[in-house]
Image (cartoon, rainbow, N blue to C red; front, side, top):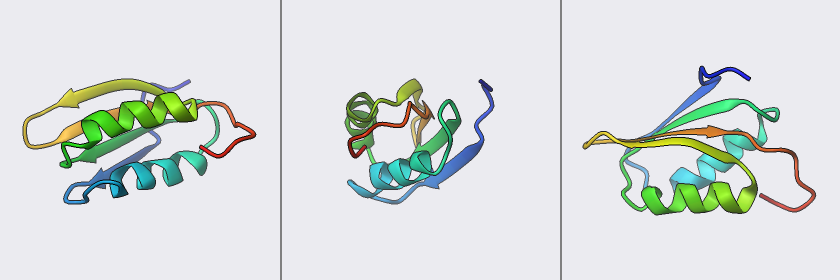
Length: 84
């Protein structure tokens, strides 16, 4: 598995629930194990992204508060029979 993101989502300016919905859509289009970077400004994503990853079976590799932006690295989890 690569530690370089295969995809970077710039979701600055989008408000809840859009950042997580866009992340979900991007992850579902990737194979298991792929790393996706997400950049957001919505402070609610600080709670929403970890919760989404836990619920959907993805791995939150890192979450960084860079002041003006929040940066997440999420690894695509295994395909599940239930909806993510």
